[in-house]
Length: 166
Image 1 (spheres, one colour):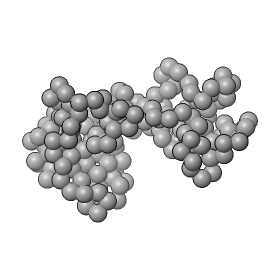
Image 2 (cartoon, helix red, strand yellow; image 1 turned 90 degrees about the vertical axis):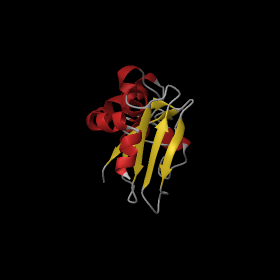
Image 3 (tube, helix red, strand yellow; image 1 turned 180 degrees about the horizontal axis):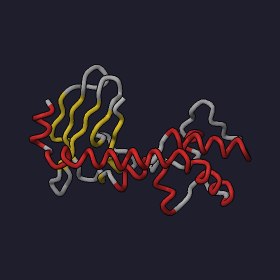
Image 4 (cartoon, helix red, strand yellow; image 1 turned 90 degrees about the horizontal axis):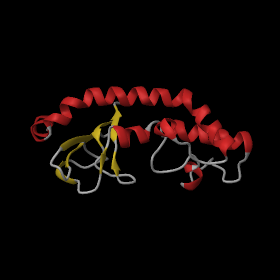
């Protein structure tokens, strides 16, 4: 299956290792930056931070995303140190998603799936996306939730680069 995907999207297969390395570096930076990002948000009274620091958390929700999504343990009434900690946890749960969406990802508008083989979660799923401009990007999702390539599902109008080997 890999060779068929390679024939359909050779450039994305070729550039993926460099993109994955950048994604891993951004992810690793997210963890030590998370207390600072959460702290800035607390000082400013906003549940977002701007500039380059915004690239180190998710693009499709605020720093209170755990509360917004109703995830157990995320307390909507939390204040002070507890709210700061929940924001740190949210950043660590979704590290560098904005970077993966806007720097390494692609816009979803006009993008179509031109190849799909398999069905997740029971089988390996291979996909090839084609943008309006004709560029093609591969995606792979394994049975144990491994991810490589670009996500075939768009979140907040973007297809994220995914790099989760285990």
